[in-house]
Length: 213
Image (cartoon, rainbow, N blue to C red; front, top):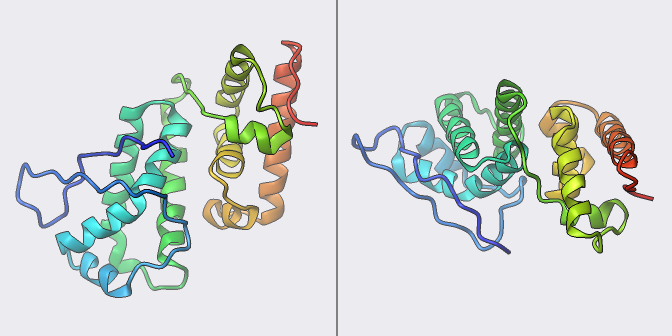
């Protein structure tokens, strides 16, 4: 696995001024539903810096990677990741354990990333799609220029459709998980993926390219 660049700007709420903490980079990203100790969450809600850093280190890599895929920009992804965690720590006292903490946090992350992407409008995005090409029809042998056309076509999708494509085809989320994180039904997630692939096929057909079978 290629190591991602992770944000280095997160500062826990009780840290001294002008102090930044760089999260540890895990060998493998933590799955959304992996449980983090309830005591860590409680301490983080009280502003404990070690607990906040533990949460940040546990989840930041996957959130940052999704933000980078959506924006195509490291700086924008760093900003969005910071925003996710700052908002999360502000709201930790509202977490009641009605869902897994990872699900609660990633639901917030998806909302922040989608809103941030909409605000950035037509900013150029760059998507890594090799895993998606394999899942979507076995196009792992596409020439580099064809892959570039696929990336550009994905970048032009409406943000909600692009999010589903990236979460399902690239990041490996299931439809039930996507539905929970995006606040839609599993059927709606499937329909968004179908619609996205239809739009990709139409866009690529103009270049004489195919997407999926």
